[in-house]
Image (cartoon, rainbow, N blue to C red):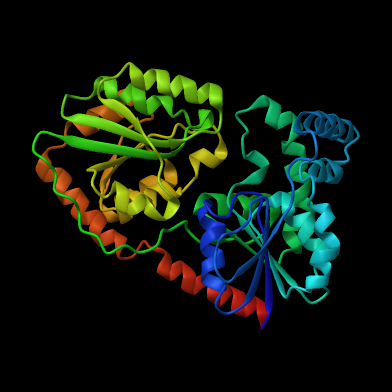
Length: 382
């Protein structure tokens, strides 16, 4: 049986794209995943690399000092390795694996992929972001990580046998800047056999789920609630990345009677959990290139859950919503603009939009993605 090595710098149990990739490939190949967390998927072997050493505080300070030292000298490869403590320790073991295909889900792991590949092995990158401008709204990131990502893109992208990405906008930018043809494989959830829930008269329940993220200005969705009529409520099913920012979100929610924070559920339970709502809400202010051109998991989870969709005029999301006629799009990214569109909704219109999502869900699901990924892998392996 041929071997596939999957590399990712996130928890593969909760990150949708590597998780789906493993599930699509594990029955036909010997799949080994290397990540910071053990993959708990039957039929998949797992190797864990440490993200911290003995004393996490001292180690973090030492690694930060080394990163800045190498950054000042333009040693971008070494800066990258300092962000992957423990990964280099696995090189001998990964070389011995003699994988036929290496799939990296993170740009920063491409140097590892090319270090451990055999001469005949192929390498595929899942470019989930446009890495040179990943957090371009953050000055510290622009100083410390942007030059590293630009170096890695210039060095490794053309060496890859295949690059896939999540949206047409990101694919076009990779073509324009680096001369590569990245194939778009959207982040579609598994197909669920659900029906739209019944909308209660005079009560419109909205849901937003995901990470509370200052780069995406999550607070705008709470401000939105100040401009809606009393039919609307919003549940936030969110996870924490930035504690200070999360506390701000919690404080804003406490001050609004029409907002509440509810516990997150496992990734595989999201669609069936949010099916009880009426509207999937996402107002994502385009603070950086990736936010402007993203096609996030949550959009397709809203559709798969048979919800009406309410979004700002984000380029790629707007294309999907308008194509399938399954939601509303505001004129601009202000809370007032989206509130104006939401307040126009009545029970009948919401029912129509939910039915449109029901029809769209039959096409926008991971079954077709799984077929395409297997085709790509078969072509690379042949």
